[in-house]
Image (cartoon, rainbow, N blue to C red; front, side, top):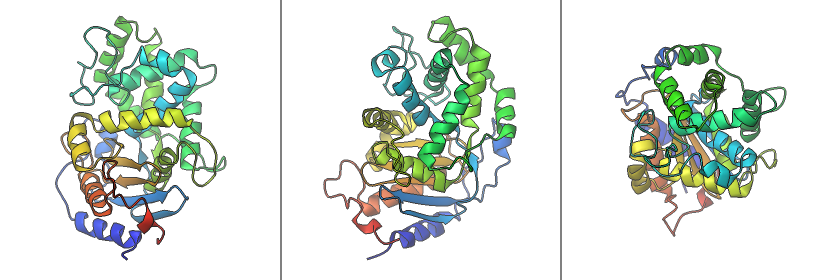
Length: 322
């Protein structure tokens, strides 16, 4: 039986030569990423990590931070109250579309697009008695299994680059304020949003974060309960329907797993009850997804029959051999 490491190595060799796509150009700091970097990591709910390629390269999370901050909001604000401010429907629009609010309620369509994520960060900032970014760093670090001595950190260059070029996100924030979705502290809330997007991690970190979601909110390595199981259910639901933006339907059809991409080139995929997968390659397509990452995960999900709609899923039986 072919080991999972052999499968990952084969996928890496298959897609490393892919040269289509470009690094994200609208955030200058992201444009400087090495387009040849490519890594794949997989962590099972038993805590076993298998990794190939440039898995030590740290990159900014960007939108991969959104599901986890949504989990923090579910815990701090509550499901029903949060739902009154941010919906859970796919928007059918690009991730940074300004036309992202429901026509009657004026809620952002879901937490995975920029308007929804900005709203959630703004709502959390309104009730936080301590610096919100510190709590976000702590939560993401716990999901990644990072120690106090080795915490996640913010890439200040990316943060400043995002802040200097964020005119579109500022427009979204002011629109949210106009409809009373968020309060008056627009700039400080946006700063926190840009900082959460600028948190650095590598694919080994991200596969552990995804595995924490796969494991019902329990970190597979530390055994710490990081997120409540009922909140993980909601997180995975919106990741499945909205995590890949206006290609979510295509992703559901071909892959059939909850996922979240980021324009820096990261991509996490969750196989509930089995494992978390993370890839990194900064060459992205027109929808903001890593080209190598999407193709590698599509192949892996097909080879291992990992779709949530496949009743004959291997359920991790082939993952015992690293």
